[in-house]
Amino acid sequence: MKNTRGVVIGVAAIVPTIWVLQTLGLFRTMPGLIFIEIAYGLPFCVLLFRAFIASVPRELDEAAVVDGAGTVQIFFRVIFPVLRSVVMTVIILQSVLIYNDFQNPLYFLPGTQNATVQLTLLNFQSQFTTQYTLLFATILLVAIPPLILFIFFNRKIVAGMAAGSVKG
Image 1 (cartoon, rainbow, N blue to C red):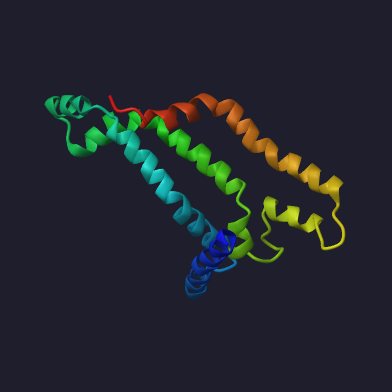
Image 2 (cartoon, rainbow, N blue to C red; image 1 turned 90 degrees about the horizontal axis):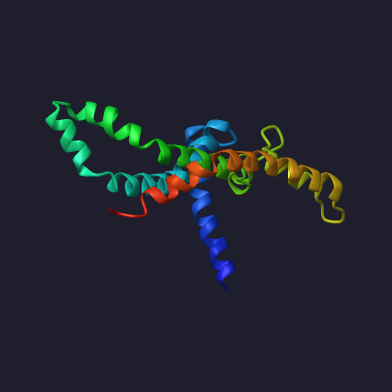
């Protein structure tokens, strides 16, 4: 029963979104898919930034005000450099999520001319046969870039995720 409701809710959100994209002339275009990915990723990013900024000590702002800095200077010279870890976390996590996204390109970028890497996996399966060698080779190629990103940026990801979790 739960699964059926989830599908109905999913379709209820997708159909109006497709209608809006068609009205704007962005359906089946890459800019339309980019807007969809931004809209779906924005709430998580806002929550992550909000939690991190709440953990930044107020003494930094007060010291900058005492030194004569204005509001814009406080942000760009004091707060923004502190945000480096959370910015890296958001960039890496959203890049991996968008790279691995299968559902949004399937709905909002139909057709074979703009197929993403994940949608090409669908081409190796049919109702009666599945080309397992090509399917698993493509899965391996799809998994390599996020794995490399995680290996190189593991510390930054963990630091950015944990930075806003503890309030001092």
